[in-house]
Amino acid sequence: MRARPGGSPPGLVSYSRGVTSVERPSVHRRLRPGQTAALWGVVASAWAIFVFPPGFGAVGLLLGLVAWRRGEPRGRWVALAAVVCTLAGLGLGLLPDKFVMN
Image (cartoon, rainbow, N blue to C red; front, side, top):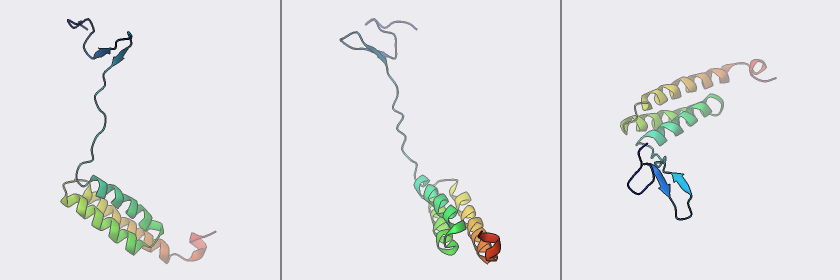
């Protein structure tokens, strides 16, 4: 690395006490539109397998479609996962209790 005219190489900051630290760019990233809805849609879809499949499945489906409308490409997959998880939850509910519980 080449030194700056002030004496320190690029990317380093010198303090008055002789301590040198490396500058790091900010790592704070903002969520894009639709990502929050997609994330909550996945959570609702997962809950739909075990707890009230029609309700949580519908919420996951709606959140997936909202995410897709806001430009999140994974929103369609969230909506599809909600349908699959709802069907899986309904299927588990139809099993006899001896297969589901101990």
